[in-house]
Length: 203
Image 1 (tube, rainbow, N blue to C red):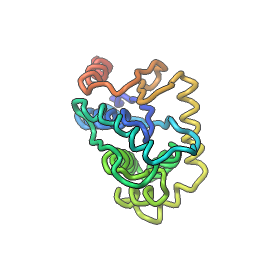
Image 2 (spheres, one colour):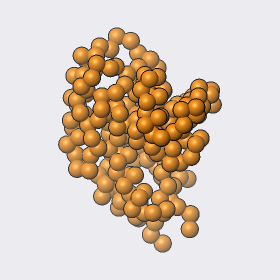
Image 3 (cartoon, rainbow, N blue to C red):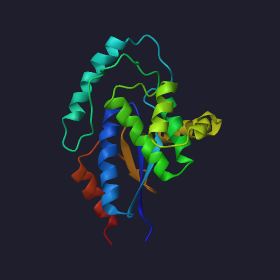
């Protein structure tokens, strides 16, 4: 039987998307081949912005303590470095799409590495140097990082974002079943995700 495919719209600068990643990846492992997660790009900050100060950004990251306090939460900390603030959402998405061309496992390592670097380690994942570090820390060949410069990856990211907007997605994380345009928004508790997915798997 083909696995249940769940399409998840997510952004690397979204703390709630980090919680959703942790919970859905846990369920994907539990279901051992019966659930397939298709991570698609949504850009909360599609364009570079100016005028943001590091101190203002650091103060904003105190809001991450809210998702950090939830059960089954990912690891967060208030911004503790002098890097940043991040420029816009596009750079990490492009690198993740480039990693996906090396296989599903390569994508997952980079996907989760980007989120952890940003929210748990206060590293600016929109900076080229940090993106290179995450790529190498994920165990991917340094020479393959050039893939991220291929225009197709940027085009795919923008196309996925546009498709999500056309469906009516205005916030992330959002998830829907493949073949069904209805979606749920927010980082649901792991038990809520589990009940929803198990209902779909029932004969």
